[in-house]
Image (cartoon, rainbow, N blue to C red; front, side):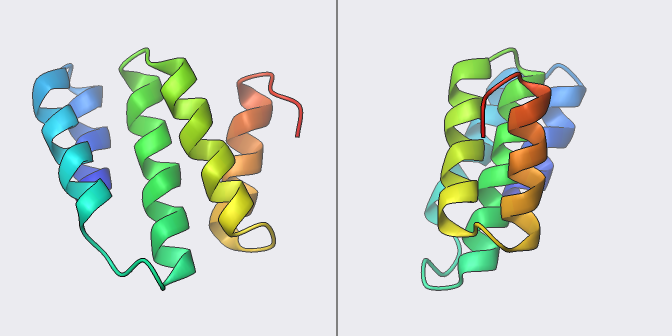
Amino acid sequence: MWANRARALALLGRADEAQTSLDHAAQEGDPAFVPGVAGTLWRSGLALSQMDRETEAILRFKRAKQIDPQGLYGNLATAALREHSVSV
């Protein structure tokens, strides 16, 4: 939910608050639950992209793809990487 909040705040142009939510997102959740971690990474990438922090966004997308290569969020991250013209 923190990553969703970060994306919403980024869309509203509230980058400082979005960053705080991203910080919370990175600390919350069960690291053993791969879909949850991958989803947080993908959503964080979307928020970072909205804040024009493309390099960081791409890193989040790559990590999501790496940990969940066949899952929903791995596939969404792959699509996001293609949108950013990153070879997958």
